[in-house]
Structure formats: structure tokens, C-alpha cells
Image 1 (tube, rainbow, N blue to C red):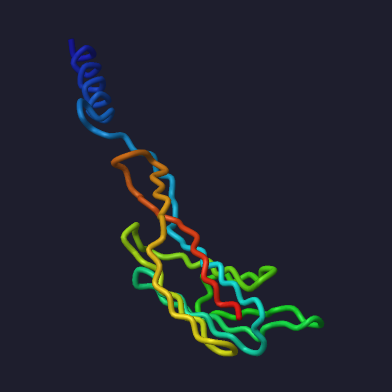
Image 2: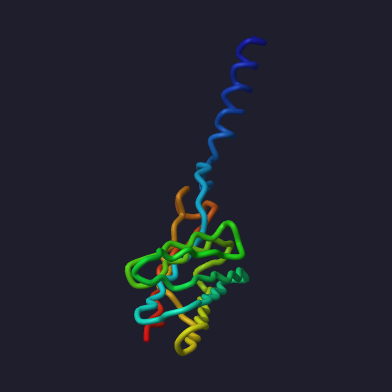
Length: 148
């Protein structure tokens, strides 16, 4: 009789771990929110600064716009940010803890006319562990025309 009682307790415990009616089982896949800001700098010469603010995250990146003999070398004041030269400017990838209500504020200054834009991007929402499970991450790409 003791063996049957022990077996029932173990089975009951396993059923309790399975979640029961109405509960959600979640995996533990991670994700990270990020926005990519594509800045067109066509026609600009000289140094340029691009400041990006989104959901409490702010970063500034500087570059001397390249000429025919040099490549662009971007430097940003946050090591988690990636700035990559593109054919017409720069793509800045900013990670952060923002959500799909965040707007993106971009200021381009330096050579050429200043550009100051606030954009409400169409966020792509990801829930890698399923609906009702955390984390919830967002990503978007916005384009800013700062060419002259």
C-alpha cells in the first residue's frame, strides 16, 4: 500500500508541474529590442555627428565623411551600438529596453544643413517563447534623409 501511495504522490506532483488547465508553458528563449537608423549622408563633406534617442537610450556617433581616398570610420559613445558605413551614409544599430510605443529621435549635425526628426516606426514585435510569455522584444528600421 505504501508503494501505491508514493506512486500517486509522484504522479500528482508531475501533473502539478505540467501546468494544469489555463496555465501557459513558456520556453526561455531570449531576444533583444533594437532599432536600426539608416542615415543618407549623400553630398555631405567634412565631419558629421548623428545623435539617436529611443526609449531612454541615447547615443552619439561621429565621422569624418570619407572622400574618394578614405573610408568612413565611425565612432560611437556606446560600445553596444554598431555603426556601419553604407554606400550613401551610415546604418546605426541601437539595442535597448524599449517597447513598441517608443519613437526614434535623430539629429544630424556638422557639415551641411542640420536635420532633426522624430519618427514613430512600424515596430515588429517578437515573442520568441509564445504569446503571454516573456520576453517581448521589438525591432524596426527607420530611414533619415540627411543628404544635401
